[in-house]
Length: 76
Image 1 (spheres, rainbow, N blue to C red):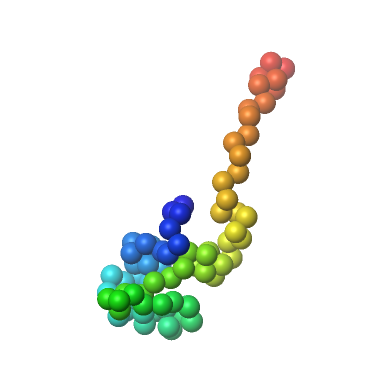
Image 2: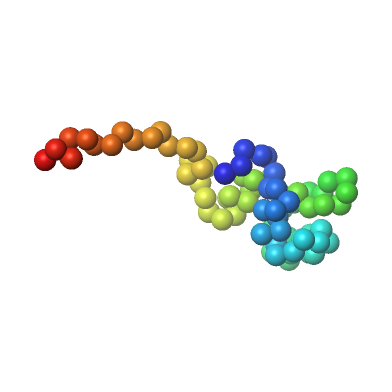
């Protein structure tokens, strides 16, 4: 997962199904997503907001520490 505050251009295309900023904004409005536009009128969506919309908790996005394999189980 990206560490960026905002969804990337590619992620926004995947979300909305369109490369065109006007159609992206139209999709976001139709589906009642909160977004802002940059100086070029391109929609921007906060990553945390997108994760929340998909029901992904903030805890689930954190990297879990790598678990050590149970080597004792191999010897039994």
